[in-house]
Image (cartoon, rainbow, N blue to C red; front, side, top):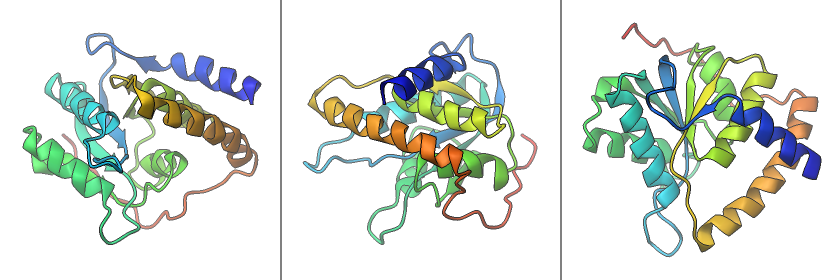
Length: 194
């Protein structure tokens, strides 16, 4: 676990940016899903910071479209729609937001970015530790993704998240060795010219 953790961090950081000025333009940004609210009812800072990062990239013309990719496997839980609504409320035009309802895992979101949405180059938007893993998946699968680091969270919630991330990185190796595919692929979605 220590070796894979270090490898993913070093590799992911090579393709991650925390400066709007320095990050290159890509046609699409891919926001990785998370719940808008915590179990205690408070707003999730991971979520809020990802939305803010996506809005900043769009408003600075670093992306033309925003793919919101997340989980909606339960009737009363729909990450993509929540993200869509938050982006619209922040002033992003509705026709510039694409919903991916089958981003059940990071691997699914990243691979679907290429296989379903036809993008071999895109900007992943999440917190640094999550971007590192997403970039590792993308690049090992031949996708020329880069990442923009949303502001991280430093509180008791982040300890749980970091522990889960270690497990996710161990699982990542098995996923790559077995060439695991997303839960769903489905029909291709054409993203028009900006």
